Structures are given as structure tokens and as C-alpha cells.
Length: 124
Image 1 (tube, rainbow, N blue to C red):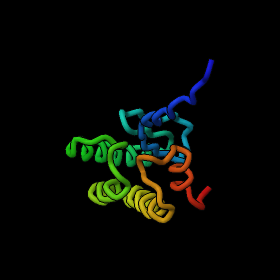
Image 2 (cartoon, one colour):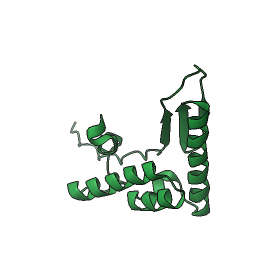
Image 3 (cartoon, rainbow, N blue to C red):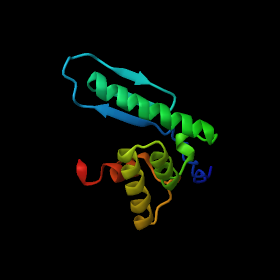
Image 4 (cartoon, one colour):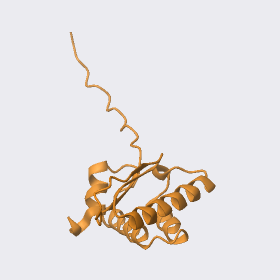
């Protein structure tokens, strides 16, 4: 009996999700909003509302483009972030775009771990 090395299995398509964390909760209220492509956790009432507004604008823009979050490149995400007036998301998308280019990596071929490392950068 001979064994043949198995064919490399294609990488399972990861579902992209934007996670917004509010860290200024002062009233111990648990605020959680789970959307199809976004998750918003915590924050004061005002911060949570601002994060939710950004998420809704993002999802609306993605819907307008008939794309999911996992289908847009970091450069496209930066453009979307600029259009929806989200400087934080714009900064993250640009960091991701530039670092992937610097490392010679493709967004769609990168692992979740690689993308997380890039997004967190020196902030962690």
C-alpha cells in the first residue's frame, strides 16, 4: 500500500468583521450590537452611538458597492473610510495596505493572524 501526500487544501475563506470597542463605559451598562459584518462592544452611551453610526455608514457603503467587508482591499477600505468620515478606520486601512505591500503579501492570501498583527502594529 502506498500513500500519496494529500493535495494542499485551499485556505478556508475567512469572514471579515469590523470590531469596534468602546472603552469609556462609566455606567456598567453592557452595550453590544452585532451586525452582519460588524460588532460593537461597550463604551459610554455616546461612544457606542458614534461607533454604531460608523458601522451603519460602513455597511451602507458596502451594500451600495455590492461588496462584503472581506471582498474589499485595504486600499478600497481606506477609500470607504474616507467617504464615511471615519479617520480611525482610514488610518487602520492605510496601515494594512502599506504594510502588506512592504512585506510583499496579498490581502486575500494573508492569514487572520498576519492581518491582526499588522493592524495592531506597535499599539499592542
